[in-house]
Image 1 (cartoon, rainbow, N blue to C red):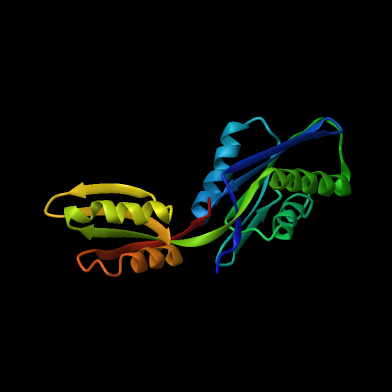
Image 2 (tube, rainbow, N blue to C red; image 1 turned 45 degrees about the horizontal axis):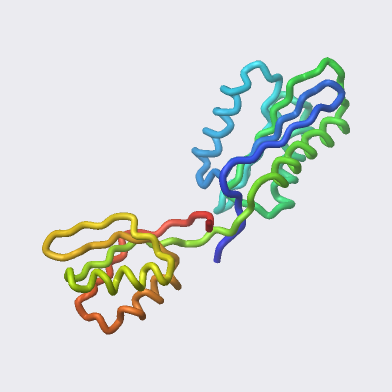
Length: 203
């Protein structure tokens, strides 16, 4: 069963009482990538006063930080915006350039919530799925048949090798792989071998 995430990167910016807020959204399938996303933002905006962040990684990892803002005014509203969207494997970083006017606790909560929600609204959302990397081996005369059925099912061939037999490397979701196996079930010389499986956003 898949879960919802984002594809790629999104950004949203606005100014509130001279403070500049920049919300950024990243697809981060591991906690290491989430931490790296935060580090990249810090490096790209070194003069900013705060880099508030929150991330949710599939499997139950949830983290947030006020990054120097009063407790509960940055990380919590950012995480709340993320969880309201029901997204996982996602990191939201909200950068604040202080404009010299204090916003107060309530103003900070609203501003960070707005920045996070705005960035998430700009993000392209998608569902994840389990993909299988596999190979198909067959004699040379079957090349046309295998290619035809792969193209019909819109399975991309990532690599081809030609020696004693032909080997195609492909990736597909399990139902699509099963359809390919069924289409080639009468071809006894066609051999499938699963390499590995992984979770990723659907295109």
